[in-house]
Length: 425
Image (cartoon, rainbow, N blue to C red; front, side, top):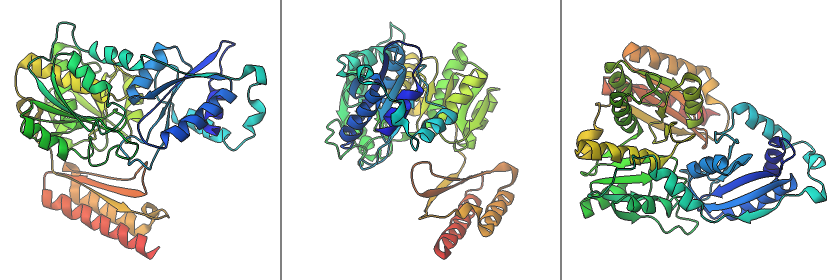
């Protein structure tokens, strides 16, 4: 409720009736947080348009479409049902900057009640009909009007999440034969052994129904993983490579490159380099990818995990729109996904997570020494990325290089030192 108050007060501009669009995914706690947010936003004088379960990119789109002052998405994305979170979008449809988020967080501990609306200035809340249809039409318009998906058999895994209605409907309206799985949310089963983080069920279904392609979304549908007709997984790096190559050949790719994070495979960087394109790397998080894209005029970016940002269409990662661009490549070239999607051979890469219960192990001298030693051993032909998770109590240790045995040894040695430091603490 206090987040709603603070966010509502932060986006009061002018003397018009201020409005908020508020969506959520399908996890049980969404009901509770939604009502609390509505109370806070109305107390700040904001009218709230309740969208119900809907993808995160749809909220970003509807902020602009409905001329709202702020957008709210209640979701913990790919996390289990018992986690939840709040994503905020500005009136331009972009996620808020660190600076604005910190300002809102700083208001939570102050006497913000003193700045709330008077009795006659309180906001109203209402359910909005037709928002699913708006988003479906928006997604369909990202393809050429003449393009049909007829002849394609598609399995779509909606992770029992926010896209369980819109994704199958959009694909069907575009002419595809659609097999939809994990479209029965019950509040507890979002992302549970399904979706982009658990694609085994999708792989099995693609094989079972002899589909041309499988599409796996996560709980709030801002990321996507593709499965080819043989059941092989196509990650975000390969999706970016496919779209970047296609757009580069058609003259659509802007800025002479692609934006991704430090986690993207070295193979993607080399693949783009062969086309005289540059890979710009940012911190982990699609928000940082988008900020770099905006600052440097690029229109393709994303993360290995499947957040793909195509700024010609959207202000944030959009799993469905990204999948449609892959499908467009399939239709144009009339080739199977397995041939189109293997744009580069990934450099051996290993990621391991170390659970931590507190403290700052990355500041320990022994850990710093182990990391420095790992960088030295990998040399110029490899990369080492060590970072705390943004959503879980984990330290992520990732290394890559042409020598797989060396990569494994470096990661295991660093993980061991962090684990020992954690145990000693």
